[in-house]
Amino acid sequence: MNDLEAITGLSGDAITYVDTLFGGMPPPCPAFEITGVHALNQGSRRMCIYRVSAQAPLNLAWHLTLYLPSPLPQNGCPVLLSPDGCWPHVITPDAIDAVLAQGVALAFFDRLQLAHDRTDGQRSGPIYSVWPEASWGAVSAWAWGLRQTVQALRSLAEVNAHQIAVIGHSRGGKAALLAGASDPDIVLTVSHNSGCAGAASFQVRGAEAETLTQLQAAFPHWLGTDCQASVARERIEAMDNTALLQSLGGRHVCVLQAEDDLWANPAGTHHAVARLRMDWTAQGWGEHLTHITRTGGHAMGSIDWSRAAQALTRILRR
Image 1 (cartoon, rainbow, N blue to C red):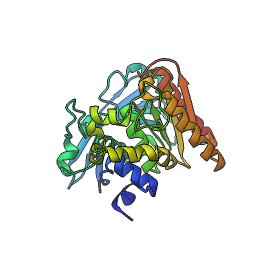
Image 2: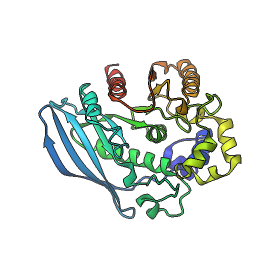
Image 3: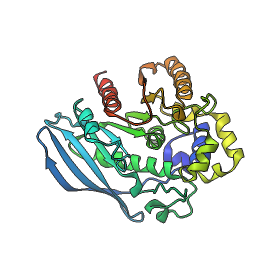
């Protein structure tokens, strides 16, 4: 068993895919602590802010915000967890309302507290201070943050430890898919307009869709260092994203896609989902895959949040 297999539980082509495209993943933290730092009752909801600390030798910490509906279910609340807390245009008051209206809690953290997203494409941030020679990119660091935060949420009495889903928009959606594929404790993975290196096929691409070469040129820090070489990108495109999506088998996936978001390759997303649905149906998992489309562009709105929360509640009713 190689290190990446031990870290992620992935195997075969999925190991090659994650290693080549994302540069692998950071190892899990040996211990963590979650500490409440603020709470506020707001009528039909409760807001809680926590500090999640990965203990020595990592010495990493980030803040987690959790909105809970009131009253809480007796056995704890299902949760949607997002790494997109750095984007106020994604985590909006309407988004919070939309999720809570479904009886689902919304948790989020700022992924930039782990790995920065610099316009100059340089790798930086606290996680690179711990592993300065790391080959993995920011998508892996953000996925690592999702995985560790899931474990932190599982320790809270207000949360149902078996009903935690991860969700991400755009680059956050890439991280959510990687986290979901590598963590069996995540019951549902939701990606929204995740495009290239996300839910979209590399092999079926609309004329205006982003290519892997374009992504590497604009955001080299998102990907592994191997992707600096064209031969590595060609290897990934030849493999396509099948192995990663197949690694989610047995759990649940919801792919949200805007048909007018051409850069995020809706044609490629349709293709990848249809291929996955065929395979999963043959294995008896057809109902585990949800694909929801809408008109409109890239932005994530309250309707998208509502549909994600509904996808989680549908799972819990089965």
